[in-house]
Image (tube, rainbow, N blue to C red; front, side, top):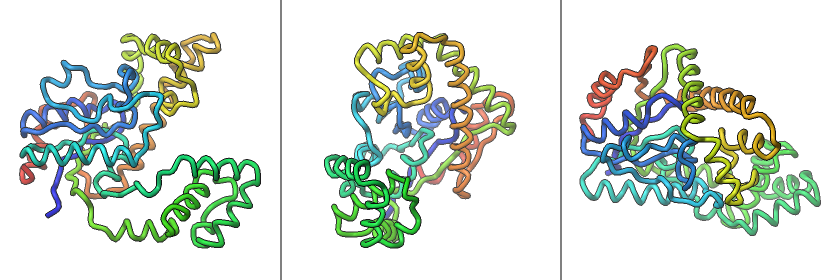
Length: 311
């Protein structure tokens, strides 16, 4: 039997963490983070990582599991998070997946196995060949083994051309075959998903802007400076996160912080728009749309009723 777990998701700054904690306390659950940046240590303010007070005694998993110098993959997340979910289920608790990284959530629920996809040396070799021989040469090589994928890709799509060749060289299967096999597999978990947002997009954007201001007041600039002093650069995945890359660029150039803060707000609003587009693809999601401010009492009541038959 496929286990069912709870999922609390939605765009940034909608109160996912707070509702997740309230649900965990109500239903005897534990939180498994689904945030691609909260997995990094030393990155607390800019990722809105819940504090000990905000966790309110509820166990949280998948926070601070990687060094910011690492490039943490979806494959590794699926492996690590599934281990947490299975342990929570064995102990008779409800796993509550909380976060806004749609790819992490979708990959974990589906149970996709990425182990055969990961070979950094091969990937680097293919990337070097792409740079030296040109995209057309590698696209032609891909066309000989996987004409379907090659027909969908542009010669300048370096990342996807390399990924398709990497999968073929590692598995002997085309990425098309791999995707078909993946879709044919039953999911690892069934997700009962609740998504949070605001009825009026302007209210969502207002909350995003105010949260950025709060992050600055809590010391985001100082956090970024500490990461730079540790040796983090723009090439590290962790420093490509919204909030970090803008402030790091301003600090390193000696520029004004104010424009960087406005850029963070703009990029955060754009990210929220992309998140909404991603989650709206799933028509099974139960949406809770806040008015001017989140009403967590009502949200908890709706969520508890929605989840009552899986606990």
